[in-house]
Amino acid sequence: MIYRVKIFVLSLALISTATYAQKMSCKEAIQAALKNNDRLKAEEFHLEQARQLKKAQTDLGKFSATLMKGEYNTIQQDNNVTFSQSIPFPSTLMAQNKLGKEQVLGAERSLALEQNNLVYEVRLAYELLLYHQALQQLLLSQDTLFANFARVASVRYKTGEGTLLEKTTAESQHLEIKNQLQQNEADRNIIQKRLQVLVNTGEVIQPNEDFVKRTLTQGTLANNPTWQYELQQTNISRQALRVERNRFLPDLELGYFNQTLIGFQNTTGTEEFYDKSKRFQGFIVGVSFPLWFAPQTARAKAAFYQHEAAQKTAGYTQALITQEYEQAMLELRKNETSLAYYEQSALQNAALILSQATKSFQTGEIGYAEYLQSLRTAIGIKANYLMALQQHNLSIIKIESLTGTI
Image (cartoon, rainbow, N blue to C red; front, side, top):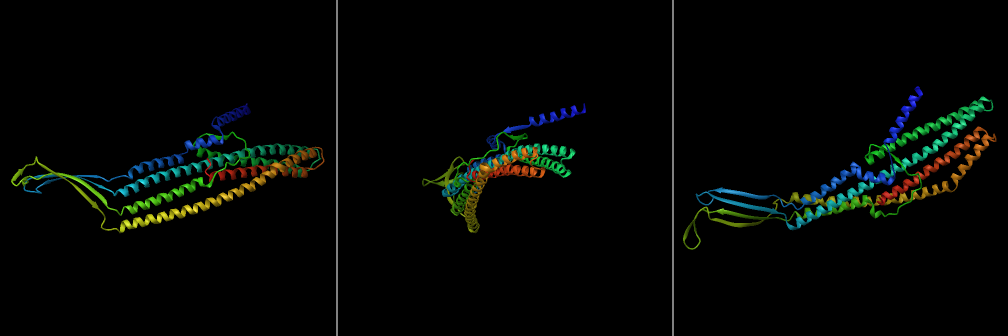
């Protein structure tokens, strides 16, 4: 009865796990991440922020309205209403507007960079899951082999045909495989947690693709998002420098006034009295500029050095990306050579070694030591093949990330 309860509880646990597991292809995982990832949403908000700030680049400043009342003409109580507006020099306004456009483009480049990084991380995690999934299948097949080996060694020992060393060695190998299975499962769980964070889901993601050889999608380094972002930073800093240099130009002052001048006025050769119902008006035109140019000079110099720094950063980034790309291509060629070795000969030899060793051990043609060595050789080849396939695919994922191939 107790065993039935345990089995029932285990079944419920498996059903619960299956309920919260979500099967996805790599493409579906990427789409989900691009839609749900909070880090990407933050970049989208930064883009909207830049778009709104662009509208502020044509800010004319505050409009001024003043009222003056009192004895400013005669003893009579006159009043004056003045409206004025300070306007930056037209070239300054145009430079500020262009700066806003460049900053929006910079935010777009930043978003594209974050998208590319996110896609790379999802592809990387998904590929590692595929690898550990394939490794689990290999380890399970090893577990079956060594379980049979341990069983045969135990029978041989009991019948006096084998030795205690043979029996202990077989059991130790079986336990070692079980330990590797546990370690692999732990690694897989860690990667699944990482993928869940990237996709922003509470469900466990299970790959529904096979662990196969990837094909490189051709791209160009000119589309590298990091390089594009740094190039745009140079454009932004260049335009910011133009803005600061334009701010040496004066601001324009435009205004209008309307007032009373209560008293006698000689406008036609005779004195005529004007009361408060008669109003006088005019306009104001002027310029304003700082008497102390040192602060603006310092700001212009700071913008110049910022532009120089942005250019150096872009140049270094280009060199670094080029070096990473060349290194990744060399890694890919190396991994292709290694993978071809396993595909063309090593895997077939491993299968032959495993088959012949099993038959020879069962017929007594070889002893346990030779059989164990054959098993290790065959299994090692298969494990190395999975590692070679993983390294090959990771090289391709790296190259596609460098060329901005999403």
